[in-house]
Length: 184
Image 1 (cartoon, rainbow, N blue to C red):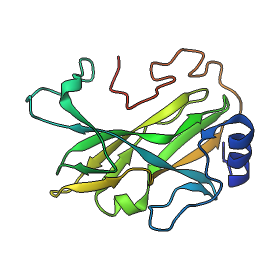
Image 2 (cartoon, helix red, strand yellow):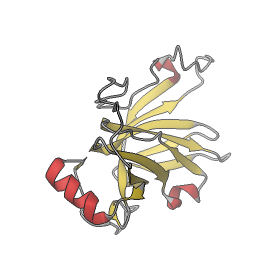
Image 3 (spheres, rainbow, N blue to C red):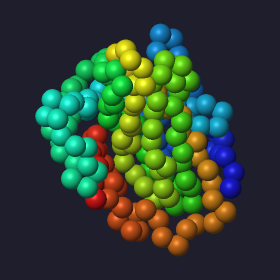
Image 4 (tube, one colour):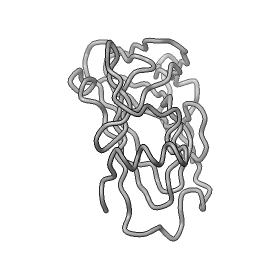
């Protein structure tokens, strides 16, 4: 298994729309950086946020998850309550080749503020917008900026194509378009 370079990511994004929209270089300025890096792609968070709330005092149950556990907001800056979390999605849509696995790590800018980004691996053949989980580990409110970089996606080429891809088995999160809540 090898980590794939900027040249491969650029080629696959231009020829096969692996990442769309695609930024060919790191975009910086006044934003938290996003775009192509040496061995990965820094994705942005959209302005659609689902903020966890305890207003209904419900139990968080992955087999019976209630949408009322969240308040949905479309904003340019999202405040995560202390010791809480938010769901969001990437600006970019991903289309993963059948011989590649993608892992994601949060950007250091957020990690150094106590904000943890979690994303499960993008499996071979998966496509859609990525649901992002942000945890605020601090006792203070924390801010996330829409349309700016939040996480780096690293592409790993397998030694061969798997017998069954995520698309082949009709994975439950295939083709998601918005922030997607847990499914069984």
